[in-house]
Length: 172
Image (cartoon, rainbow, N blue to C red; front, side, top):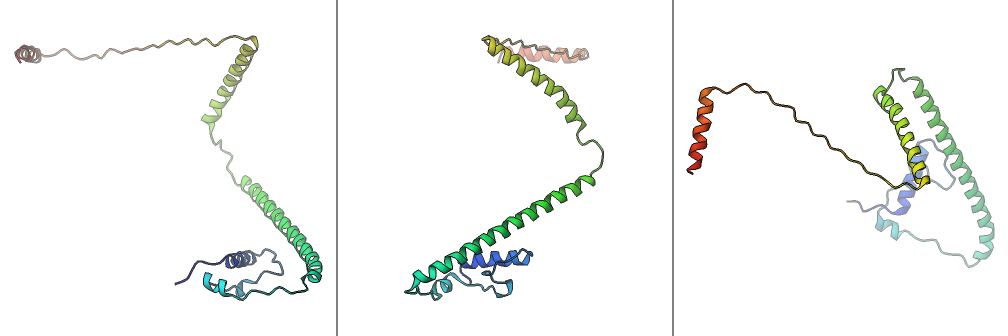
């Protein structure tokens, strides 16, 4: 059974994925063949580097090296992002040429041509009313129409049955 991976392992795995994808790797990242799977316990038990007593003299030279490596990594990352973006834009252009020339949504276009003019007119009238200080007037009218249901005349026995059932309902 394997424990959860440490953060160092995740960084190494990410580096391995970028190396596999063909992205430029930095000098401090391991190639994918040397990535080891470590458990959280073994990562914690790994020996830690001791600090040197003369760290002040080493820090000056190593900090400039780190800055240049950071700057170089930053430039590489930016170039990788630029290339990815350019590839994406090229792919979009290629896909556009493969589309058919048939209209995609004629009903929507027809509605939008009407609705955009309607909305613009209402917005203009609303703006003019607000500038003139006119209050809102709400006018509502409800119209209900019930179409007649045309049924054939009932037969005599149906009428007699309904009259009899109504008569019996009176008595309970």
